[in-house]
Length: 290
Image 1 (cartoon, rainbow, N blue to C red):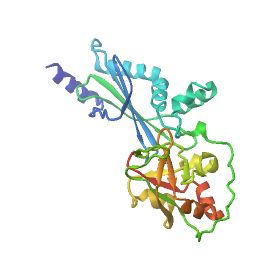
Image 2 (image 1 turned 120 degrees about the vertical axis):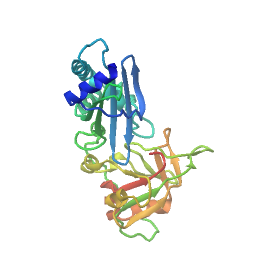
Image 3 (image 1 turned 45 degrees about the horizontal axis):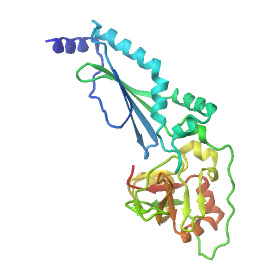
Image 4 (image 1 turned 180 degrees about the horizontal axis):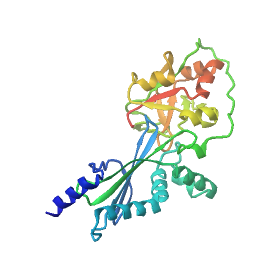
Protein backbone atom coordinates (compact mmCIF):
# COMPACT_ATOMS: atom_id res chain seq x y z
CA UNK A 1 0.00 0.00 0.00
CA UNK A 2 2.83 2.36 0.94
CA UNK A 3 4.56 1.64 -2.39
CA UNK A 4 1.38 2.56 -4.30
CA UNK A 5 1.02 5.81 -2.38
CA UNK A 6 4.61 6.72 -3.12
CA UNK A 7 4.17 5.94 -6.81
CA UNK A 8 1.10 8.14 -6.97
CA UNK A 9 2.94 10.93 -5.24
CA UNK A 10 5.78 10.70 -7.73
CA UNK A 11 3.40 11.01 -10.65
CA UNK A 12 1.79 14.11 -9.17
CA UNK A 13 5.15 15.73 -8.39
CA UNK A 14 6.70 14.72 -11.74
CA UNK A 15 9.85 13.41 -10.11
CA UNK A 16 12.05 11.38 -12.48
CA UNK A 17 12.40 7.68 -11.79
CA UNK A 18 14.92 5.52 -13.65
CA UNK A 19 16.40 2.10 -13.15
CA UNK A 20 19.76 2.63 -11.51
CA UNK A 21 22.76 1.43 -13.49
CA UNK A 22 25.16 0.09 -10.89
CA UNK A 23 27.83 -1.04 -13.36
CA UNK A 24 31.35 0.14 -12.76
CA UNK A 25 34.02 -0.27 -10.12
CA UNK A 26 33.11 0.57 -6.53
CA UNK A 27 35.23 3.46 -5.24
CA UNK A 28 33.29 4.03 -2.02
CA UNK A 29 30.82 1.94 -0.07
CA UNK A 30 29.57 3.06 3.33
CA UNK A 31 26.22 3.13 5.15
CA UNK A 32 23.82 5.11 3.01
CA UNK A 33 26.24 5.70 0.12
CA UNK A 34 27.53 3.83 -2.89
CA UNK A 35 29.87 5.41 -5.45
CA UNK A 36 30.99 3.61 -8.62
CA UNK A 37 33.14 4.74 -11.53
CA UNK A 38 33.60 3.49 -15.09
CA UNK A 39 35.98 4.68 -17.80
CA UNK A 40 35.03 4.74 -21.47
CA UNK A 41 38.46 4.86 -23.11
CA UNK A 42 36.97 5.12 -26.60
CA UNK A 43 34.87 8.16 -25.69
CA UNK A 44 37.60 9.38 -23.28
CA UNK A 45 35.23 9.98 -20.39
CA UNK A 46 34.90 8.99 -16.74
CA UNK A 47 31.35 8.35 -15.49
CA UNK A 48 30.66 8.48 -11.76
CA UNK A 49 27.44 7.20 -10.22
CA UNK A 50 26.48 8.23 -6.69
CA UNK A 51 23.65 6.50 -4.85
CA UNK A 52 22.46 7.94 -1.53
CA UNK A 53 19.73 6.31 0.54
CA UNK A 54 16.75 8.51 1.39
CA UNK A 55 15.88 8.96 5.06
CA UNK A 56 12.82 6.72 5.63
CA UNK A 57 11.83 8.82 8.62
CA UNK A 58 11.21 11.89 6.46
CA UNK A 59 7.44 12.05 5.85
CA UNK A 60 7.67 13.88 2.52
CA UNK A 61 9.35 12.17 -0.41
CA UNK A 62 10.11 15.55 -1.96
CA UNK A 63 11.81 16.67 1.25
CA UNK A 64 13.75 13.41 1.51
CA UNK A 65 14.98 13.80 -2.06
CA UNK A 66 16.00 17.41 -1.44
CA UNK A 67 17.87 16.49 1.75
CA UNK A 68 19.71 13.73 -0.11
CA UNK A 69 20.73 16.15 -2.87
CA UNK A 70 22.12 18.52 -0.24
CA UNK A 71 24.06 15.69 1.39
CA UNK A 72 25.58 14.62 -1.93
CA UNK A 73 26.51 18.20 -2.86
CA UNK A 74 28.37 18.56 0.43
CA UNK A 75 30.59 15.58 -0.41
CA UNK A 76 30.65 15.77 -4.19
CA UNK A 77 34.30 16.85 -4.49
CA UNK A 78 35.34 13.93 -2.30
CA UNK A 79 33.33 11.44 -4.33
CA UNK A 80 34.67 12.67 -7.67
CA UNK A 81 38.26 12.70 -6.44
CA UNK A 82 37.86 9.13 -5.18
CA UNK A 83 36.65 8.18 -8.67
CA UNK A 84 39.68 9.84 -10.28
CA UNK A 85 42.22 8.31 -7.87
CA UNK A 86 42.46 4.79 -9.43
CA UNK A 87 42.63 6.06 -13.03
CA UNK A 88 45.77 4.80 -14.77
CA UNK A 89 48.12 7.60 -15.76
CA UNK A 90 51.02 5.63 -17.26
CA UNK A 91 52.88 2.37 -16.91
CA UNK A 92 53.93 3.14 -13.33
CA UNK A 93 51.27 5.40 -11.81
CA UNK A 94 47.63 5.89 -11.04
CA UNK A 95 46.30 9.29 -9.98
CA UNK A 96 46.32 8.30 -6.32
CA UNK A 97 50.11 7.87 -6.44
CA UNK A 98 50.45 11.52 -7.44
CA UNK A 99 47.77 13.08 -5.27
CA UNK A 100 49.49 12.35 -1.98
CA UNK A 101 52.91 13.48 -3.19
CA UNK A 102 52.10 17.04 -4.25
CA UNK A 103 49.50 19.26 -2.48
CA UNK A 104 49.48 21.71 -5.41
CA UNK A 105 48.74 18.89 -7.84
CA UNK A 106 45.96 17.64 -5.55
CA UNK A 107 44.45 21.14 -5.56
CA UNK A 108 44.49 21.21 -9.37
CA UNK A 109 42.76 17.82 -9.51
CA UNK A 110 40.18 19.06 -7.03
CA UNK A 111 39.49 22.03 -9.32
CA UNK A 112 38.99 19.62 -12.24
CA UNK A 113 36.60 17.50 -10.19
CA UNK A 114 34.51 20.57 -9.48
CA UNK A 115 33.85 20.84 -13.23
CA UNK A 116 32.11 17.45 -13.34
CA UNK A 117 28.90 17.65 -15.34
CA UNK A 118 25.81 16.04 -13.86
CA UNK A 119 24.00 14.14 -16.58
CA UNK A 120 21.22 12.54 -14.55
CA UNK A 121 19.43 12.82 -11.25
CA UNK A 122 16.75 10.27 -10.46
CA UNK A 123 15.21 7.98 -7.89
CA UNK A 124 15.83 4.26 -7.74
CA UNK A 125 12.91 2.03 -8.86
CA UNK A 126 11.94 1.29 -5.24
CA UNK A 127 12.11 5.02 -4.32
CA UNK A 128 14.64 4.27 -1.60
CA UNK A 129 17.66 6.12 -3.02
CA UNK A 130 18.70 9.20 -4.91
CA UNK A 131 20.93 8.42 -7.91
CA UNK A 132 23.16 11.02 -9.54
CA UNK A 133 25.54 10.53 -12.48
CA UNK A 134 28.43 12.78 -13.40
CA UNK A 135 30.66 12.71 -16.49
CA UNK A 136 34.23 14.00 -16.46
CA UNK A 137 36.10 14.21 -19.79
CA UNK A 138 39.58 12.72 -19.68
CA UNK A 139 41.01 15.41 -21.95
CA UNK A 140 40.27 18.99 -22.88
CA UNK A 141 41.03 22.22 -21.08
CA UNK A 142 39.16 20.97 -17.99
CA UNK A 143 39.81 17.27 -18.55
CA UNK A 144 40.90 14.91 -15.81
CA UNK A 145 44.38 14.71 -17.38
CA UNK A 146 44.79 18.50 -17.71
CA UNK A 147 46.91 18.93 -14.53
CA UNK A 148 49.46 16.58 -16.11
CA UNK A 149 49.90 18.26 -19.50
CA UNK A 150 53.55 19.30 -20.04
CA UNK A 151 54.06 22.98 -20.70
CA UNK A 152 56.21 22.48 -23.78
CA UNK A 153 56.97 19.99 -26.53
CA UNK A 154 60.17 17.97 -26.42
CA UNK A 155 61.42 17.97 -30.04
CA UNK A 156 62.02 14.68 -31.83
CA UNK A 157 64.70 14.86 -34.48
CA UNK A 158 64.47 12.70 -37.61
CA UNK A 159 66.85 9.74 -37.64
CA UNK A 160 68.87 8.36 -40.51
CA UNK A 161 67.45 4.95 -41.37
CA UNK A 162 67.97 2.40 -44.11
CA UNK A 163 64.26 2.00 -44.70
CA UNK A 164 61.89 3.09 -47.43
CA UNK A 165 59.53 5.51 -45.73
CA UNK A 166 56.45 7.31 -46.96
CA UNK A 167 54.26 9.99 -45.46
CA UNK A 168 51.33 8.63 -43.44
CA UNK A 169 48.22 10.24 -41.99
CA UNK A 170 48.53 8.55 -38.61
CA UNK A 171 49.57 5.42 -36.74
CA UNK A 172 47.29 2.43 -36.13
CA UNK A 173 48.55 -0.29 -33.77
CA UNK A 174 46.76 -3.60 -33.45
CA UNK A 175 47.42 -4.68 -29.86
CA UNK A 176 44.61 -7.19 -29.42
CA UNK A 177 45.00 -10.51 -27.68
CA UNK A 178 47.79 -11.81 -25.49
CA UNK A 179 51.18 -10.24 -26.19
CA UNK A 180 54.67 -10.92 -24.86
CA UNK A 181 55.22 -9.09 -21.58
CA UNK A 182 58.67 -7.62 -22.21
CA UNK A 183 61.20 -8.58 -19.58
CA UNK A 184 59.24 -11.61 -18.43
CA UNK A 185 58.29 -15.02 -19.81
CA UNK A 186 54.58 -14.24 -19.58
CA UNK A 187 51.97 -12.96 -21.98
CA UNK A 188 49.73 -10.04 -21.09
CA UNK A 189 46.79 -8.03 -22.40
CA UNK A 190 47.41 -4.34 -23.05
CA UNK A 191 45.66 -2.01 -20.60
CA UNK A 192 44.70 1.56 -21.53
CA UNK A 193 46.19 4.62 -19.85
CA UNK A 194 46.13 8.38 -20.20
CA UNK A 195 49.76 8.51 -21.34
CA UNK A 196 51.05 5.18 -22.67
CA UNK A 197 54.56 5.09 -24.09
CA UNK A 198 55.47 3.50 -27.41
CA UNK A 199 58.80 1.67 -27.70
CA UNK A 200 60.51 -0.22 -30.47
CA UNK A 201 61.60 -3.82 -29.96
CA UNK A 202 65.10 -2.68 -28.98
CA UNK A 203 63.47 -0.59 -26.21
CA UNK A 204 64.21 2.73 -27.86
CA UNK A 205 61.55 5.28 -26.97
CA UNK A 206 59.35 6.26 -29.91
CA UNK A 207 56.69 8.35 -28.18
CA UNK A 208 55.82 9.61 -24.72
CA UNK A 209 53.66 12.44 -23.41
CA UNK A 210 56.50 14.95 -23.57
CA UNK A 211 56.81 14.44 -27.33
CA UNK A 212 53.17 15.34 -28.00
CA UNK A 213 52.22 18.96 -28.62
CA UNK A 214 50.46 20.38 -25.53
CA UNK A 215 47.64 21.80 -27.66
CA UNK A 216 46.97 18.38 -29.17
CA UNK A 217 47.01 16.85 -25.69
CA UNK A 218 44.44 19.37 -24.54
CA UNK A 219 42.33 18.68 -27.61
CA UNK A 220 42.14 14.87 -27.60
CA UNK A 221 44.93 13.36 -25.54
CA UNK A 222 48.07 11.48 -26.43
CA UNK A 223 46.48 8.49 -28.18
CA UNK A 224 43.01 7.24 -28.98
CA UNK A 225 41.67 3.75 -28.32
CA UNK A 226 39.36 1.62 -30.45
CA UNK A 227 37.84 -1.85 -30.22
CA UNK A 228 38.27 -2.73 -33.90
CA UNK A 229 40.43 -1.83 -36.88
CA UNK A 230 37.43 -0.49 -38.79
CA UNK A 231 35.91 1.63 -36.04
CA UNK A 232 34.96 5.18 -36.99
CA UNK A 233 37.41 6.45 -34.38
CA UNK A 234 40.31 5.07 -36.43
CA UNK A 235 39.70 7.22 -39.51
CA UNK A 236 38.73 10.26 -37.47
CA UNK A 237 42.05 10.22 -35.65
CA UNK A 238 44.55 8.37 -37.80
CA UNK A 239 43.20 9.33 -41.23
CA UNK A 240 42.73 7.26 -44.36
CA UNK A 241 46.35 6.20 -44.80
CA UNK A 242 47.79 5.29 -41.42
CA UNK A 243 50.89 3.19 -40.86
CA UNK A 244 49.42 -0.12 -39.70
CA UNK A 245 51.51 -2.10 -37.24
CA UNK A 246 50.92 -5.18 -35.11
CA UNK A 247 52.18 -4.75 -31.56
CA UNK A 248 55.21 -6.85 -30.69
CA UNK A 249 54.70 -6.71 -26.95
CA UNK A 250 53.47 -4.99 -23.79
CA UNK A 251 55.74 -3.20 -21.34
CA UNK A 252 55.54 -1.60 -17.92
CA UNK A 253 54.35 -2.44 -14.43
CA UNK A 254 50.74 -1.79 -15.38
CA UNK A 255 51.00 -3.22 -18.90
CA UNK A 256 50.12 0.04 -20.65
CA UNK A 257 53.09 0.60 -22.95
CA UNK A 258 53.17 -0.76 -26.50
CA UNK A 259 56.21 -2.26 -28.23
CA UNK A 260 56.33 -1.99 -32.04
CA UNK A 261 58.78 -3.28 -34.63
CA UNK A 262 62.08 -1.49 -35.15
CA UNK A 263 61.24 -1.18 -38.84
CA UNK A 264 57.94 0.52 -38.05
CA UNK A 265 59.68 2.90 -35.64
CA UNK A 266 62.22 3.84 -38.32
CA UNK A 267 59.44 4.59 -40.80
CA UNK A 268 57.90 6.96 -38.28
CA UNK A 269 61.07 8.66 -37.12
CA UNK A 270 62.93 9.04 -40.42
CA UNK A 271 60.54 11.64 -41.88
CA UNK A 272 59.56 14.93 -40.24
CA UNK A 273 56.02 14.59 -41.61
CA UNK A 274 55.56 11.33 -39.72
CA UNK A 275 57.12 12.77 -36.58
CA UNK A 276 54.57 15.57 -36.84
CA UNK A 277 51.66 13.12 -36.84
CA UNK A 278 53.02 11.63 -33.60
CA UNK A 279 53.31 15.12 -32.13
CA UNK A 280 49.68 15.74 -33.06
CA UNK A 281 48.54 12.58 -31.25
CA UNK A 282 47.30 10.94 -34.45
CA UNK A 283 47.72 7.49 -32.93
CA UNK A 284 45.04 4.84 -32.42
CA UNK A 285 45.60 1.68 -30.42
CA UNK A 286 43.18 -1.20 -30.92
CA UNK A 287 43.04 -3.47 -27.87
CA UNK A 288 40.75 -5.76 -25.89
CA UNK A 289 41.06 -4.27 -22.41
CA UNK A 290 38.67 -1.38 -22.93
